[in-house]
Length: 126
Ligand SMILES: [Zn+2]
Image (tube, rainbow, N blue to C red; front, top):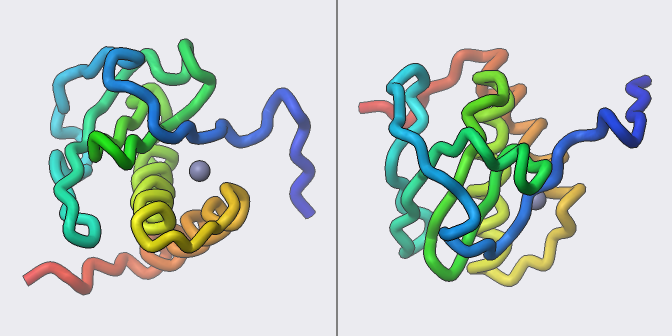
């Protein structure tokens, strides 16, 4: 069983932060995290930041009004990928008014990430 200590717990994600609270950094192209995503009928821009964790103790944020997803690139590749999935689900949660709590979204994003990663799934590529 996994024990989570308070100081080592998973970073939270913040919602509807303003764009001025982060410093975007150029995408190094190391991982294939997209620069834009269509989520429902909304075009989201994906930004990387190297200050998110420092300023907000978080690995990623979504702004459902401005349609921004911000990912801290100091986190490991797997954390960044999972964080992107998490924020996609957060955005869907908002647009569809599902009212899922953060910890349930975390369970879904970690579970989905594991299935996609462990099976090497890229089933939507043409
Ligand atoms: Zn969340």
